[in-house]
Length: 194
Image 1 (spheres, rainbow, N blue to C red):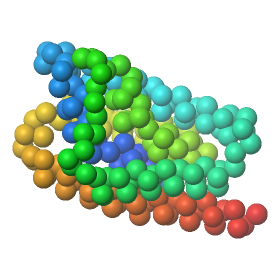
Image 2: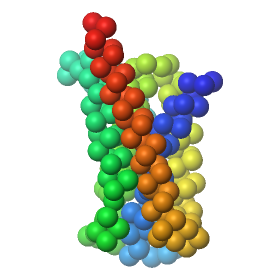
Image 3: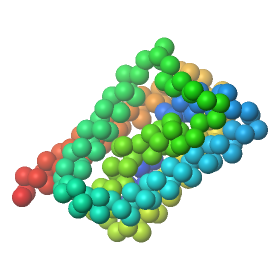
Image 4: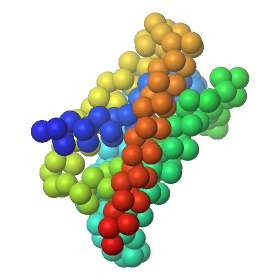
């Protein structure tokens, strides 16, 4: 049970629902208000399907390219670290998203904002280390948590304001930095045991 909860928390944090609120608001700003919910649900379902695909094809992917689990741990940790540092030291004056079209499709919402490199790495690592059903359940629960947060993005942004969203984003970034260091150290430890 602890492994399941830990996996859910890790995936949910990496998906960064609160950090993605400003990005989703920017991407959906030009979408008609009555279409926003439909577009958001579509993008979240696509992201979930991509993560489930990586869950079941992750082992094949690793074998096909001769990638060891410790390499995935280290690479995932580095990617997670870079994303985390960007969250902690984000510049609010920089526009984070510039949607070219009125209604985004797959990019940038489903990929890379929800099912980004770090989330896919975590799913693949978890699938390699734990039973697939446990990881599948964790991916679904984390996706539901992320979906709830993002479905409330417009009301939440009004309540929290820019400073509140920035504070939550930075706190999430700090937690992810710790997790990324742990992933890298775990990969190095596994390599040293060979």
